[in-house]
Length: 145
Image (spheres, rainbow, N blue to C red):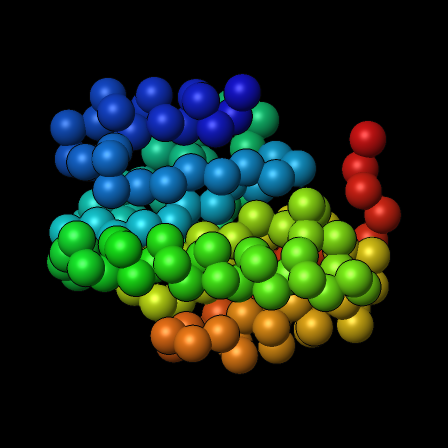
């Protein structure tokens, strides 16, 4: 529900091109991913997310720059490769980890059972061809009901 509310607010905001921004929500924390045209758009997206009801936090991983079809295709491929590697690792519950990539920077979002699994997931992402950096937003601890 939070993701839908944030997406609607961004669509209604004349300062933003909502199609440039991917919104994910985990446990009341909103994650903003993608590429926007200006620093002002990046800040405005963060403000819109914070104004949304029931938001406990905002992680603004938006980058400023241009997004080409080639870079979008590369990001889809990188995300798929990282997710495949996570699935192949029997120690990691890959279903608990959302993977996205923007301009070859991978973001890992979710909850894992240990710090070891968190670092293994990051190491896996960093070891994937084409990855420039990793934002490891994984939380360690039991799944919340």
